Length: 303
Ligand code: NAP
Image (cartoon, rainbow, N blue to C red):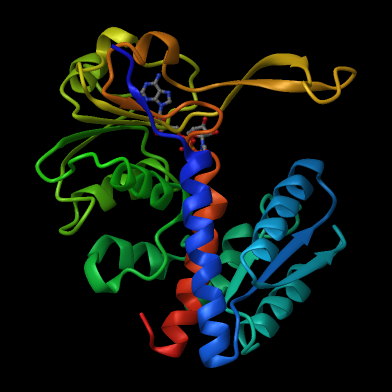
């Protein structure tokens, strides 16, 4: 039997519509909209295309989007001063610094300079600590893990008491999603195992999972026989495995993307599964919008 597809592209539309309606309501009642600034240093094509998508989405939901492009030669001191300016700007509720930054700038120093109450990416140590404490302490869950949890909830998958196995222990995906799934609350209350390259029996752990979240960056790492029949499989991996002509313009080559799970075989065993592309990918920017809206709501005291 074929698994139910959990499509990020569809869930994104639902959430963006909810955000748009909420922004319109806040604007009418309070006369303000969420303000999001994106600071882009340099002209890396990958960063530009990612930032462009963020701007487009922010406009779509009715945010005040500020694009601040800086030369690759900007000094660390000047970049810190810029962040300070936005930290003190009442009309800005979310500050994003597009990574990577040029080598002469200490990324950690820059990210740690963002006011934790405007850190809508959720990477500031204060927000990492809030996430660890859980409950009402959490302000901005990091966007990809927040997207994963939202997909699991909206797909109607039972998480309470579920065995969740997370493959990967990165600071941006593995560790935060593991932490989120073990908290008390909706879409959580799970029993969580985190596996990585030093794990002795990867297959054995995966086979126990009611919910298997894979974020390793290794195409096809998880074999279909490692999946418990009926399990929910969230494939976070995005791996470029080749190129193919674009459907829109066949003279242009586009990347062929594959996840960390052997999708075609896995969908015959899993109960539900995310595709790659079109699964977790679209959720990250969506949750960034949600965090920015939350930031304004915290400020207005309407959470
Ligand atoms: P990362 O920082 O490279 O971490 C990968 C993790 O997977 C590490 O903890 C590593 O273990 C573990 N791992 C790697 N190979 C393994 C193996 N053979 N067996 C067991 N564990 C293994 O990667 P990341 O940033 O978390 O990203 C993971 C994947 O998700 C990538 O494909 C990335 O492109 C994708 N991603 C997608 C989105 C999105 O869709 N929005 C967002 C973020 C990331 P060790 O710690 O032992 O090295």
